[in-house]
Every structure is written in structure tokens, then in C-alpha cells.
Image 1: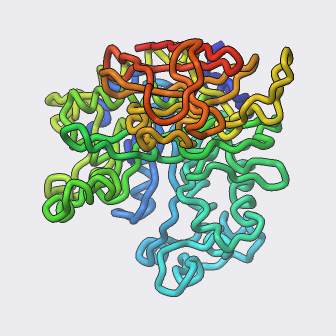
Image 2: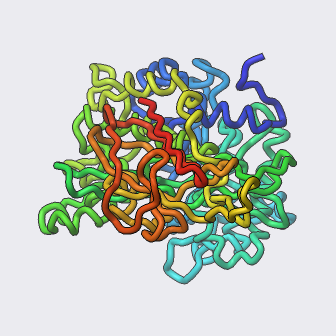
Length: 504
């Protein structure tokens, strides 16, 4: 039986199979290069197509939209019936979309209301008059969300991205309304979805009520830290929070639910900023004056390939519960080069003349998988560094709760150089008096380091088995042989033993 088989239930191992073969495929059901897109999907072995369908602001009537989604879904599933297509229900509602859409009888019936002959009402959906932010605490918004979700299930979608859920649920005390809608869609999916199961994510680190997660996994864009001592618009990724735990929708307690990262889009490249801001201002303005995918697309092909490699390794090492949704398709907005553009992973060809030629690099990473890099991963509970009230069993000496790795390498993992108190490069206690930290170095070269016990400069170590020193000088060095090398440094407190491991 295939690893991707499920029917009515999806154990975590099966869910992770799909997330380990995930891509962000924004509006692929509307793609004018669908045949070539399917070729790439099969070549890469993709099984989960995130953001495959949905609207932010509709460009066509719903009957046309859903017919196109259904036709594309059938074509994709004919190529590979295992593939999960994800639909989106976002934190935006527009008057012209709502008020041209008749409410089907099934919506009134689902909410126990008398059937009316009317369209959706914009003023009954929003947080404030004239606003476009939906308020899920309002019944009309619940009806709109349910309507769209049910229609996408009927089109063949088996997953939902629920957008910035904490924004539109701000007035939903206890998340009762959004919980109701999600459960109504789950119930419909149990009867009518392709494999009697639909799964949910949203931009959230945790959405748990009475110990139970409303979501099957959590999802967020990446967080960045700009690098100013390298030519070009360089940046590195930074750990931010963790994926919360709870009882999963499958009824299993998880200390941390799976987590999906992606390159997000929200407005393209800010050409005004690039024309008028200093390098320092641009560096801290979003992702060098743009959203994530436009920054990525603006790099040259070699740089994009290296950043894909870096992102994949970074995800594997920094969040063992995390997965990376490769950017198969993502909107770039009009500001990228003055016209509406879409980033496409496809190799440039007659079948896809505007491809960005990343498919071979992505295929190598996806076919190799996460396992090799997970071997050096940090612990899954990223916010628990351990060593709380732990004593050395031989001497009774209390081990330090905080141990920090610091030095010239820190800016390349998102920290301040030589910050002996940094939380970003704090080491994890892994048992037997030993602390460890893994990170991905995006650039080859020589770097110095020291180890600060208790997070101060009063008792530091830098040499294997060496003596304690005080102050900021005298650090040891390590050499990174090539870009995107995984480095793991381990330190044993009582013996001052230091071990450096590297994996390219």
C-alpha cells in the first residue's frame, strides 16, 4: 500500500508524507501552462499542492470559477490520483464578490435557517462598516466560508488554507465560530470528499481549544534577517516560535503538530523603495523592499538554486516537525517588472516561456528527502532548551540552564555578532552534561566562536577541553567548506569537550 494512502483518517505519518512532498502552487487550477505544470509535478514527485484554488478578489463569477477548478482538478488527479489539492479561504471579502453570489439553499439548510432568495450581504460579514476584513463571529461570514469550502470539496479539493485566522477570529471568543465552520466542513468531507477526509491549516503557531487543535498542522511564512556585509540583497532565515501541540483532529496527542513553511506573497517588489531608500533602509524593509517570493524571483538563477538548497536544509535542521512548500507557482504582482507576473518553478521552454528554471534544483532536494539532514536537527521542542535544575551525577555540580554559542558566525544565522546572551544561538541540553546546536551556514569561509556558560562572558570556553576564560577575546575558529553547510557544535560542561560536525 502506498505511503500516501488514506480514506477517512490520516495518521501523522501519512500527513507528513504529503507535507514532505509539498509545493505552493498558487492558483494552479487557473494556470495557462497546466500541461507543463503537471509534467513538473510528476518529475518532482509532488503530492501536496498548496493554494491550488481560491480567490482574494474574484476576477470572474463563481460558477465559472468553480467549473475551471473542477476541470483542472480532474486533469491533475488523472495524472496522479494521490495528489491533495488545497483551496484557500482568506481574510478578505469584497462587496462585488459577495453581492453577485446567490446563496445556495444548502447553506441555509446547513445553518438551520429558512431558505431565502438573496445574495450574500457585505455589511453583515465585516469587522467594521466599509472594511474588507471578515468577522467570523458573524453568521453571514460563517455562511460565506462554509459555502466556499463545500464548493471546493465538490471540485476535488481535500485541504484548506484558512489565511490569517487570528485576524478574522479576533472577535470570536473561544474560537467557537471558526471551530464550528471547520467542523461543518470536516463533516461534509467525511461524506463527500474524494477520500472522505479534508485537512486544515492557517497562518498560526497554535489554535488549540480545550486541548484540541482545530488545525491538522500549522503554517507560516519564513522570517528573515538581512545580511549587509555581502554584495547584493542577501538575507538569512531565522527561527521564530514553534508549532504548538495538542490533541490532533485524529485524536492523538502531539507535543508539536507538523509545520509548513513557504515563501509568501503580499504585494510584490516596491520599486519606489528601491529607487529612493538607502541600502540600510531597504535591508530592513520587508525582504529587501519586497515580499518573500518577489525577493526570491529577483535573484539570479544560481542564487535562487542556492537559496532553495539553503531553505530545505534550514527547515530540516531548525524545525524537525517542519516542512518546506517549494514555490511551484506564486504571484509576483505588477511591481516586479511593470506587468502582472507569476513565479513558476518550471524550466523555461516553449511550453512555459516565463519559467524561472528551478525544477532541476528542486527535484534533487525532494528526491533526496529530509532524512539525511534531520540526523543533525535540533530538538523538536525548540522553545525548551532543557537543563533546568539538572545536576552532574558524579559531582553534584548544577549544570548551567543557559549556554550560548557566539562569535562571528552569528549574523549568518540571524543573530547579532558576538552576542554571548543570544536566544537565537542558545544551545540545547541533550543529556549527559552535553549541549548542542545545529545551524546552516549559507556561506563558505572561516568563522570564530566561543561558548558562553550561563549566557555571560565571565565563564567562556572555546577550545576542546580547554580552560575557562573571561572576556570577549581568544575565540576558536571553524572553517565551512562550502555554501549551505550544516554545522553542529556540541559542548560538554564538566569536561569542556567540544565537537564540531559538518554536513554538506
